[in-house]
Length: 194
Image (cartoon, rainbow, N blue to C red; front, top):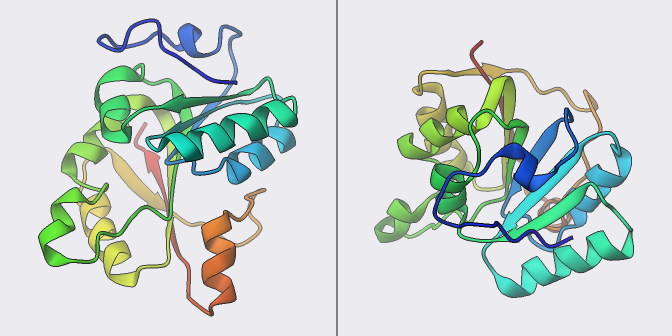
C-alpha cells in the first residue's frame, strides 16, 4: 500500500503508519523495486514493514508488488530518506532498519552525499527502539570501511555478529547482480545500546 503522511512537517506517531499495535516495524531505506521488502513481509505476516524510496519509478514498482501480493503489512513512502529519518519518523518506532546497497558515490567530490554519517547514526538511534537493529550491506569495500568507521565511532550503536543463515534475509536484486559478477558482499549489523 502507498503511505502518504497526514503531515510532512511534524514527527509522526507510530499509529499513523500502521494503526494496529503492538507489532514490530521494520524500515527499508531505499527499498528500490520492493522485492526484498515484499519477501520479508510475506515471510513475516506478524510484523509491519515500511519501505522508503525517493525515486518515483522504483516507489511505484514497490507499491505494485505489495498490492499484487496482497500484503497489508507493507507500505511504501516516496520521500527523501534523510528527511524521513531525521524529521518524519517517530521516536523509537522500529525494531529494524535496513540499508542495502546504497549509492556509494565513488567520486571523492561526491562523498558528502553518502548516507552513513554522524547525523545518520544519531537519527538511527532516535528511530530505533532500545535493542533495535541496523543492518547494512554493500558491494563497495571502500564505502563499507568508511561506514564502519562512522558506525563503530557512534555512541549508542554496538556491533553484533551476523552469521549466514542466522535469520531469514532475502537477497535484493542488486545483491543477486553483484554476486553474479563475482563481487564480495560486505555486511554489518548493529544494535542500539539498551
